[in-house]
Image (cartoon, rainbow, N blue to C red; front, side, top):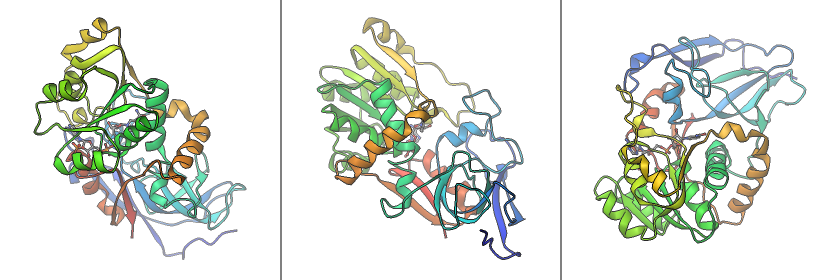
Length: 341
Ligand code: NAP
């Protein structure tokens, strides 16, 4: 069955025009309009309603070897999103289905259905499928439980703690019976860490002496450090590790727009002294276990023990470049989502 939008509908796309040096500039992007076409056999057409904005997007714009190939120049910018099936010649999807997939930064996506799954708008608001029920929640879940191996009674320190992943990590650690300490920028976010996300203590890295604050709030050391930001915060956190600590390298947003190569943490010998480990994780490696994690996360959301906080910006697809920059200025709280008007 197909109900493709009228023949004169256009699909606005945001394509990568140039590889950024430092923070992405408006000229690194191009807006392209294409006609919306009927899907071919085995394909579906999705009208995108919500686009996920991720710090990792900055890495995907660089032409370097990584866990995923870079976005090519002239290609539609890669992005996860939610949308409604408008036409389908795919046996697995019907018109009207609400779906998650890697639809890119565009108004309509022509998809082969790979990596696409239905979501239930009656079970949770759509942005939550990009937040705690999406890659964000899965990253927190596998990073904390599998890589961090957090145990009740242990101290879990989280950077980027008021962000999408960090806000979920803190809550999951608390659910596990850990003492939780969050690091975030500014007094408002720090208040939120304690009042909304249940952190035992919050540290404002912009105003505090981080080393002194860690000594105060982590008197017995840090058993799990869940790092979202890298740089100086990682380096200082390494000085406070407990014996046998696990450092989870989830991300390093403070380094993504560097124009110089990052300098490594000079305090790394703390790993030796404390018989600690530092492990990088990529959530995609856990794809076969997403269903079990999603079910558990959905259960905690349903019984109110987990809050998914999303920062939804309403706009046009052309607002994507400016909205992405909010992540690098700390202007988001929770999961940043662009809702297409
Ligand atoms: P996010 O934390 O919601 O957004 C970014 C936040 O980072 C900002 O709000 C800001 O918070 C903080 N930030 C920005 N620049 C900073 C700087 N120079 N120093 C310190 N903090 C800075 O983003 P997210 O989606 O949850 O992602 C968090 C991290 O996880 C990122 O590094 C991302 O790449 C990574 N990630 C990894 C995986 C994986 O599989 N490994 C999957 C998803 C995400 P403040 O206001 O507190 O500074």
